[in-house]
Length: 111
Length: 117
Image 1 (cartoon, each protein chain N blue to C red):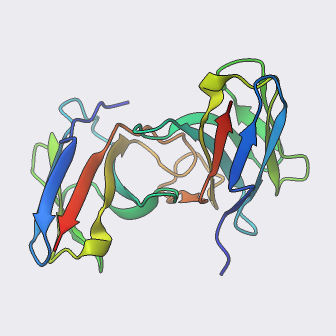
Image 2: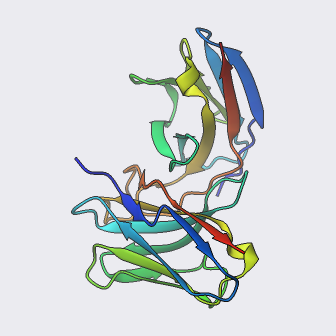
């Protein structure tokens, strides 16, 4: 499984765009990139998944460069409720295989 | 619809006591996972069921840990003779995926926070 590296923590003011970059230098050809969000006292929640280029949904955007050795989760106009830990995962399949989480990035949004 | 539920949400046990943690997956979900999350860390895989079959238990840290899913729905994680290092949040996740080649997301429950004194 590809190892991922992401910042331990980030701070942001409300209303700003937040970009969290994850490095996965040894990503395999068929691996997908998935991001999960975890609030205190809750289980992780799927945010977004992509293979290449850009993916956007109602929550976030995911930018993946051509070499796929990194990816950037972009959260537009964050609010206090976006304070959470964000995990970047790289795996061939995510439905029927154990997810491998790193320590994640702890995002703190302040007013 | 209802998500994954876990009970109890909090459990305090004395060292040496046995505990049982329950997971109710989303109705109809075939696959069920248990994870352990230590304070400040990401979740770590414990074991995986497809229906009632336990297909992978490579993550169970010792033979004191036992999981079952006898009817392919509700699952129980049992820890015998609890130790202080067992203190963690135990998360359950389920998916509708039954084929290996699947990108279905895993849906997590809120977890059971176990504290062993």
